[in-house]
Length: 309
Length: 309
Image (cartoon, rainbow over all chains, first blue to last red; front, side, top):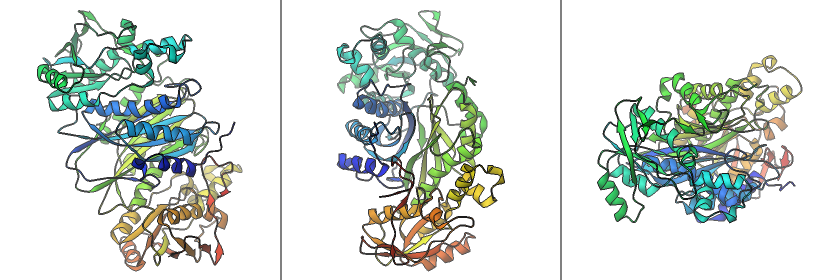
């Protein structure tokens, strides 16, 4: 099947999809001046790696492409402003439908689609770039200090548990709702990230490749170690899912005094972040329940998706 | 061959490649506050569509991925600030070498690489996002008015002529230098675009898909027509190359009074833009030498690369 889309038609379809996208169709999209810092990031969603275009609903692919970027903004404590979509699409797949689905997901998640690129390509590839504003200084992986508490914004492992069941043949619509949504409609923890930044968090990272791996990355960039007391595991998930499954898109937050942040989350109607351990000065000390914790998770290019460094 | 790169190693390789990239390795890259407008854009370079990874020098692929984005900044009259690279890479291709080549091209072109993403993917795909600052209001395709003169920043068709000769079997290094450079090392017309914006240009577009096609796009968005008197053709190129070959990355500029811009370009040591025609009010009137000029060029998704709408 050749759906016979053309780049100009993709642009027109997105313009027709919503008022938020009216600026699209130019060489560049304009960013208004601001006295605040901004952050930006690009993440890819590739058919056969992150999604399966033959098996995933189009809306889920589009949601994921936007959400993984907004999760990076959440880790910086940012408020989303806008997105770009660069789309490489095989002729047999309708680029118009994908672009419109991304525009709808971007509107729904608060970061309207304002530009991008469309091209042919043998492998369906979505590159979303997101822009956000930050009150104060953006959070990074680099500020964690000895004595900080470590928090996560929710239980881990549901996306991995859901994926395992889908790969074993279970129909996506037959999954328990919390596994289905974790896998197909992850919610970037934007409000948590914004509160973490304003209540004095020292560092943050989102759990994209695996909690233990992402926590090691935060520790590496900060030059510190950590002692975990426990790991909150999502219902129907295993400890291995929670430690190395990835794609949870919860935030890991380092903060000296967590009580004000926890109170602020409760007051804002958000799930309270869970204290799971603390940062220590010795960068070699990285433990769970007193035992060494290896970084496990997904590293692109590694021979196995579940690797130990 | 499996070059056995891993995402973490790609990041380390880029960090090691130059001081400009030291901020890389976080979830997001930070944009400092500014009182100026910014513009941003994403363009894809896909193996088998825009480049051939088996035949193109790596440095040329990297240069192209950055330059096509900076050409969009040039059309807005912007000064580049920074870039992101999202890279989908097959296992057999060394993602580290590509990322380092992109970082070097980005440094050389004045827009340091500050972040991005690396993932596996069956098709080599580079998605560069560029950010730039604009003095005053960004130029777009939308402001051209009846009575404006139309200028181009140089002769057209060299990239297309060079590509034709390479596809016919001529070795890239045997090409005449101006064809080789047009194809493998296009130079975004940043200084021209900045002067155009500051000397009152009403609209601009870069020639990426074909001069006639891109000119129609500018006319479409501005709701106007045009009368071309002539088309400047690069040595060794044909009129068809110049009208529909694309990838020239010269700018098309609409401006009411072109003399001050031309003088400013001369004073700045830049090639003087060439007056090729004028904008007219009737959007149906689009002519070259009095004859109707169809939009010819490359539209992604169209069944033939040389199409008439």
